[in-house]
Image 1: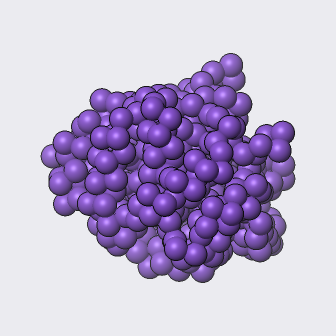
Image 2: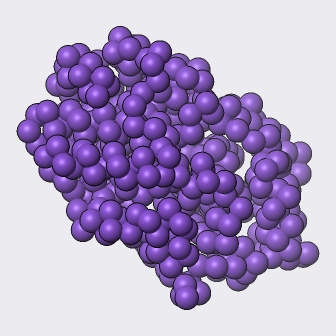
Length: 365
């Protein structure tokens, strides 16, 4: 059986203690949301979700917040293409119409799109208000809900507009995974295995050994994978809140992945699918440099394939298309694209000397 609640703490170094926040992991947590200390003062709430999640969980969260609390509900269309300024403006419009103030709390109920744009709306509303993450997808539970990166997409690139704005709490209700389609669950596994590749070789080995249980959605094994992923991300973020150094390793696979998302149209490839392919490309470059053995690339590829994730880029994307798309990546510095490669399994580094030929060979397989 899964323990009722596991609590992790994101402790931000060199920052006031009240900037730290809990990550709660367990079953049935949405129904107990009102018991959160962060909601103890009956502060008004702006509750943001989408049309897919609302019928499943909105009433449960609304009831948990209590009838005495003023709640403004904002239900957006679903899809990656909604991660845009117009959606953020809609949240602001509703919050202003209902006369919310700096004491109000924004709550994001949904996947990464809802979480990212709600956090960005909270960062900008009255120059910053509190917000709480209620992630409902595996990918958002292990990645986007933790760490305070918020933002929206731009036609020229993914996540180019945003702000660092840490949540007051992250509440991961494992029951929400029961309604998650297989494709979305698989996309989340790409971010899970990423943590093993870049930071924790023991976790990587554990994932390889438990691949069949994860694919079968064994509740105990999935809960452990989520907790370990969040713990790793919390440790990285604690050391580098604003991505000045170490935190950049969390972008393993993302430079190539974001290029795929942009070129194929946001939503055509799920974020986790694009990251899966991007990790394989980056791992191939690492192997050709002699930094990791070919077996590492093979094991990673096999693991991703077991979940039905793509490990080869779209045929329409040539090396020149990749290079053009990546030139506008937010990790570009001094005009050079920076890539996260594996110096060894569990050790990631940031480099800016990857050549066109290296990329061409890697995308060709």
